[in-house]
Amino acid sequence: MRTIKALAGGVGAALLLALAAGPSGAQAPGERSAVIPDDCNRACLIKAVHSYMDALRAKDPKRAPFAKDVVFTENNVVMPIGEGLWGSISDASKDGTEAADPRTGRAAWFGLVREHGVPAYYAMLLRVQDGKITEVETVVHRKTSLPSPFGDVDKYTHDPAFNDVLPSEQRRSRERLKSVADSYFSTVERNDGTVFAPFASDCERNENGLSTTSGQGGSAAVANGCENQFKLGIYNINKEIRERRYPLIDEERGVVVSTAFFDHANFYDTYKLTDGREMKTLLKWPNSISLIEAFKVRDGKIWRVEVVFTYVPYFMHNPWARPAPRGADQ
Amino acid sequence: MKQASRTLLAGLAGALGLFASTAQAAAASNACDRACLIGVADRYVDAMVKQAPNSLPWAKTVRFSEDGVGVMVGDALWGSIRAANKPVMHAADPSTGQVAWFGIVEEHGDPAYLALRMKVEGGKISEVETILSRTAAFGDAHPFLATPLFRDPLPARQPRAKLIAAVNGYLDSALSKAGKASTAIAPGCVRTDNGKLIDPALGKDCAAQIKLAAFSATDRIRARAFPIVDEARGVVVATGVMDFSARANSYKTTDGKTHPTATTHPESQAFIQMFRVGPGGIQGVETVFTPVPYLMPSPWTR
Image (tube, rainbow over all chains, first blue to last red; front, side, top):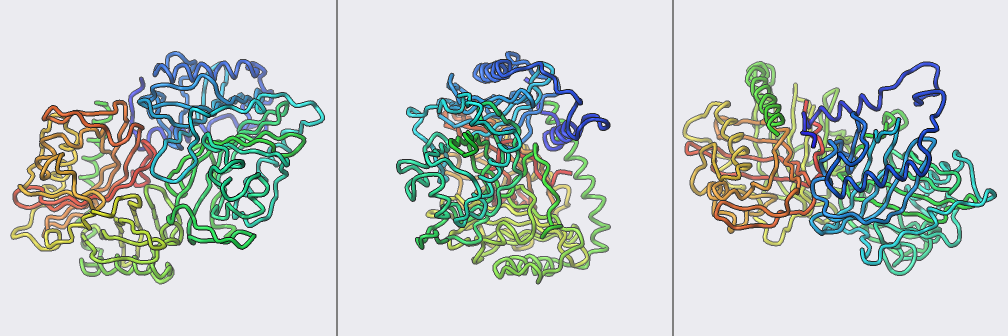
């Protein structure tokens, strides 16, 4: 168990160094080498995920192959491995939604954890380099008094679609998959009925273990269906979908795993849907939600969405993101 | 943990030294006295309600945070506030050019406790640090100890260093699992958190709470700073972050009773606290805190 050293500044500085480090010169920007190592395939990456979850479940970091300078965040805060959920966890589900991207050495896992027996939804992105886990980014959503989807843990299942390999004609390039995921966030941002994203007619979304596009859970109570909801402008309260990142893309399966913040500025507390209905914001004060979100894109259209998100202070920054300077375009 | 404590103590000692050495220089150059500082703080809140940030005198470089996150002036509470209520508590320190404002604001009709610390340099606002408690239970809330306690001068001034040491000692005492008070606490001292009196089951007054180790589920209190000291009134404003690791989901008070922790998951709380220190020790504590992600750094840690 690593001790906390200089909590206030040391870890932040370490992360900055880690993010800024890397040779500059005759490589593509952001790449460590001009040749992408082919040393950890999907099975290897998923194995690393399982090692991590086994170690977490046992509260024993020694059980996972961590790099010496591994960087770990929980809900956008840098902390040593062994802190946060590592200290409170009592169990984690064996099964989860899994994704991997050998090109970037990243893997993801969405599932359920328990802290002192109390369930929480959990999403994790990790990175393997040279056989070691170098990065771990997590979002943990605990049930609080704040309004938020929180599915029945006894009914929580994982959509096998995220694991299915697409026939070649239904696949799209890495770049296109990223654009499709980004268009989803652009549709959510200041959602006024304009739909920028291509949706499959049977698109479904699961938020913190709850279907919010079918039945009566969350936004589904207002309208069913991904595109229908956006055409109504249900998500108008999102002032900005900020610090969008797409760290994991699997072209074979059409899976993109992204991270972002949804900023709810709440400058207003009522708004109108495109059909004229008046809506009230869930909260009346500024807040943000931090998320790790997985998209399944089939034939160029968004077919499945699974997300774990949690409230964080308004406008909180993700240490993994590099926000553009603000003000120049305002 | 020992190393963390040493780091904290070293930082604190550095901060105390900094305050001591800079206070006199600041006093000489800062023309804004207590009434002036309180006036600027009131103008700030009024400008928020009117959503008129341009009506205020801003320094060339301004730092602004809400609930531990740096934001732009005009954003966050600036967009949601609709009213500021009475009564209001103030504390001011012309030697550091800093002022605090504690009160209740309304966001689209919903009340929230606001604690605000502001720095004024050369008549211009250079720093604004705010903490808002928006989920407090207001039904039985005790709306601040807006009593003469924090307002009226003491019979005799107390040295700045002594006042800071008393408050820092209170924060240390709150962490003691043995219920050991490392500072004097006056009889009848009352503490409120977000306008609510501490549950009497955890001690009838501040001294009893410390003796019972009522707050000992707290792992650490970090990023401590004491930016406002009013030597005439014995008032100190402290800022910082409390960490709750939730490695255990219960804790024991010194009377042998076991209590559940407030949460079963790790959490931190960013806070601004106002203390009154009289001749007999700590006389009153007002806290505004809000939960933030566990171990979130304070943007004010230098």
